[in-house]
Length: 620
Image (cartoon, rainbow, N blue to C red; front, side):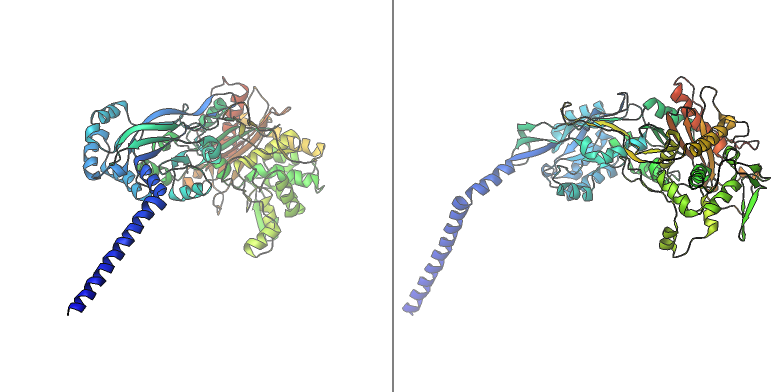
């Protein structure tokens, strides 16, 4: 019995010694082997790194006018690590902030998706009175503080909103992507979501700073230790003229659509309009769910930059392409006459001209002036889709222009190969007839129309359009970027052929039977071309009185392209008015208002009223 007890005691002693040995070895490992590591972790628990947002770079027009800048704003920040009872905190904050509980909850939910030691935005762009109240009640509001942050400022309101773009809080997907690119983005940061703000994000954003602060065991700030100041983003100078941009937007009145103004000699974008617009300031301060729903439910798509996103049948503005293709391939000649009785038969189908009674016998000059469909039907049918599509591509249609904006669409110039690939069907001659007047499968963007018109105006040089003139470096003395004109291609168009097409465009505006005669300007000679594009096919002709009763979404689009002065071109303009019905009476006046303001800035701008024309001139 005694031996058994001794064995048990010895076993117990061995176990105790083994346990103490393990504990001592673990203590030695923690204190000696891993001492530096855990000491660093302890310091990290005592020191916080607070990100400091950098002011985004400013955006100016071509003459140095500020379009987008920054202003100081006050934001209410929260450190989730210091907040034990958010419910109680919110109850005290709500009367001061004057917002609803749902707003605070929406911000607070982001706590689950970010480290608790990082600050979280609870309210933005606070008024001075609310800031003072928060400061006065700071003792009863643990874990929150006021921070001054740069906020986007728009001195001209919603001017060029779709071009400039808007900001929004970074999403989890964007945060993961940017993190993989070794960029310092934090939850709650604002990032470019559209327009130039998105395309030039890397240049505009700058480099965020950091502030290291010492905190106690509860995370309460004790003192600031070190601050790395943020570096502002680079400033951007555009090719846009803000006064011309404003005049172009005013010219649209309440109409929806787009306009692009180009310098025909270098591809500079002088104005880029997309209507209706929106207020980017709402996004800068944090757009409400009600405001967002209102924007995305608007059938007129205010968030879309229609100059590069909108794809429309070009209608009769495409007739210059058909004419040049036929003339350059020697399939026709300017003096050729075609009789227009109001329609033309090709195979088993009859294709109508827009004018009921027809235009009679017309040559190219008269066909462009009065926009006779039958002349182009006949020429296009004889020429074929291959020659037509080659000229369209050469003039910059059916392909992205390469402008500095993201999301540009390429439009569509149909070919035999495209149709077989897309529909597994061969090409039909009737489809060529439709394409010859810019209908059928043909789709273009307003920017492409402007590029095409500029090439016709300058003698055949297709420039890559650009809207950025200069990106200034952070130091303003090295690394500055200046955009030089870029030639995409030069078309060796015959002088006689080019002159015939341009003379026809001059006649559209300056001869009495021209479809844009009514909106001509006395101060400057303009060369233009009207067009209308079907949205839905009408089973039968619609009279002028019936046009007023067509539902808005089923009305034809109105188009117009022009360059001026006609004898020595400087600018090219393309206008698309969604569901505007008639190019001559709706799109042409908008374009001529823009051109008039370009040559005489003191000229008053009249908004479009979309009146149905009273006679045959100006219908197309």
